[in-house]
Image 1 (cartoon, one colour):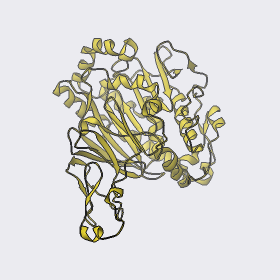
Image 2 (cartoon, rainbow, N blue to C red):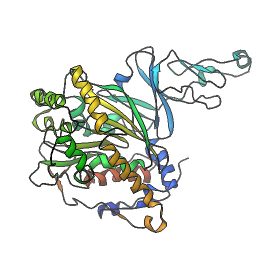
Image 3 (cartoon, rainbow, N blue to C red):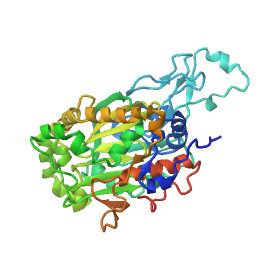
Length: 437
């Protein structure tokens, strides 16, 4: 049985450019998020390159539900709850690796790569039990698992629309990162994990559309990396946009390599410029200019990335005031190894726990979360009113397009999608895009 929303977000507040602070602090709101957002939405769980052969696995979370993602013996990928159906203990404690199966440390229940129960300690005792059926006691699979050009997503909701429908026209934009080269992509190296004392939505909305903070929060870091002053993103002469589809958001300008330049390695910028004609051939002239530009994106609900730096990350909720950040680096599979290595090093220098930009962000998100503990403070609405009249029709860009990079349009679209899922137990109307602002 689904619970009743403790506080339905009135969408008229977003129409007026306002947002209640309570959604960043309330334990009740957070619990409903786990049920109506994370237990229903398609959530990123892996890149196919992380599962190169049968037996390759990794562990992750969807909301607070722990999950194993594994390549089965037949080569297909599956995902299961990382919880033994006997007493509930984890059956896998490693972050990633290769295995022939999974065994619970508690009572020795063992499971195949397909999740089926294969055996247990003192198995004879169970086999003598009338009605005991091993086939009914395998690991619980996710309801649906699907992929898009190397990215794998899962949902616990059997009634969720297909992944292609959930992503919608945002696939047009995802191709900027996933399909600019015929060899496809891979995650380079391992995963960096850190914990932030913030609400997961503050991080996700930042990547969804907050270019405004870059020129202030990151001014000194950007100047140090670029060797001089940074151009103002709000210059009206800049060709820049906010675009969103079903709560998936991308803010960008068309400077080609602005983000990539900040990682401090010329080899990455040279690679992007040398392959510009290939990008144009595959993506067209507009999207080719997005490949490494000053930009950021978030796939609803919690999967973000920065073109140019190529850092891909998930904001894993650990409570209303705590978030685990998991980070990877995406590279083109056929890029020279020295370019891949430069991208990894550059991503660590800029967006890692000790990176020149990430430390700035983490401090701000933690402050924005914990300042809302006050009873009176939480009664004051927040301002999300930039760009209320910025929506335009664009001949080449699908979805909801807004003029200007300094804008709150994508943040409003993110919370509109969040509110639709929080206020509804079903999917009717949840993926409509024509009312996004």
